Amino acid sequence: MSARRALAKCRINMDASTTASVAANAMNKGDVLATARVAGIQAAKHASMMLPMSHPVLVGNVHVNFTIADTYIDVEASVDTVDRTGVEMEALMAVTVAALTVYDMCKSSDRTMTIEDVAIWEKSGGRSGTWRREDTSPD
Image (cartoon, rainbow, N blue to C red; front, side):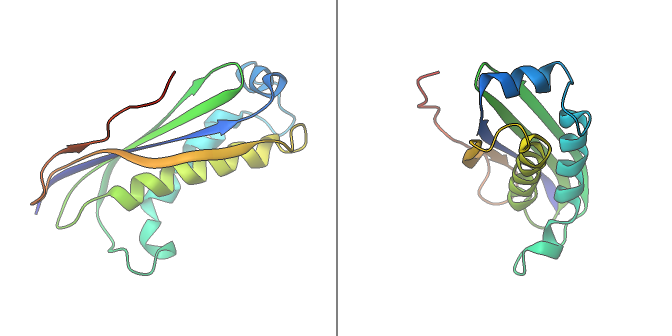
């Protein structure tokens, strides 16, 4: 067993009015980001139940954070464990379910939303050691 960590990210594109409503906590269904954060944490803890070939791991810390821009929200999740396998799938589940929760809570005001660029950005621990994705985005 060893300490392991994974960081995943994705982006939800939406109308500027939707991001403004999310930022102002003015969506009809409630606090979008707080709800999405809880959903992402829950998803990380239950990844092996949804992914048939994923091993159950003891999830230590899960952090789900959001960055709001004019026409998108970036979602980032980091997952830590001390176990026999990595937590990449748990991090991917966290960002994806958090993004889906944002979509669900905002769909009544914006049907044009898209979820894009779901990817692992970093992983550490285990035999393969540390890996980091090169950031090639124009932002």
